[in-house]
Amino acid sequence: MFDYYKDPNNIVWQLAKRGRELWFFISHSHADHFNPSITEFDGPQTRYICHQDVPLEGKVRKCITMRPGQDANLDDVGIHMYGSTDEGGSFYVKTDTANIDSDSIFHAGDLNWWHWLGDTPENNADAKRMAWREFKELEGLSVDVAMFPVDNRLEDAMEWGAIEFLRRVQVKKAFIPMHLNGPLWTPSVYFTALFGDVLCGNLKKKAMNAYFKVTHAVTTLYGESLYT
Image (tube, rainbow, N blue to C red; front, side):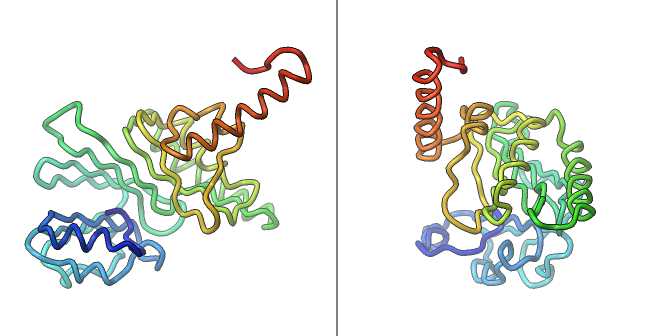
């Protein structure tokens, strides 16, 4: 579980009742990323991997703390903590270091290009500078699954961080939007044209429907498609 916050369907509790091994990754201590109730799942089958600022050490049986730039190995699982443009860090997890074909996961935490429309030019310049600094650390990374913020509060800039992230990081199986703070995201035609192959499930279906409506309109208007 990454940044456990809410679980209205009690999925984690159902897993716990079945005796499943539970690993909680906590990127930072903001309330929408760290719910202190995760200590209720503590037991011999539970691990907690968290940023060093998360107040869990000494409160649960198995807890390791990390800071950006640090590596950890637990059983066959390899973990690296990357940085953030807000509090805490972000996680890269290799699910089986002994198997080169095993899945890898990236969870961004609050790493994003936080460009707020209406903010001062100085603040937005700082936000871009911080985003570029952290994205540079990710250049060339390849992951199977990536979870990254696409926050409605950023309005027209909500996809900017995701686009720049995907320009630098190869996502092989699925890009999963998170930190929505609003309605479910329908990817723009531009995003879909660039990265539609890594969208998954209903999200991909919605995006491709919107994409083909636009390309069909272009074909009808000009007599030929502008997209290949």
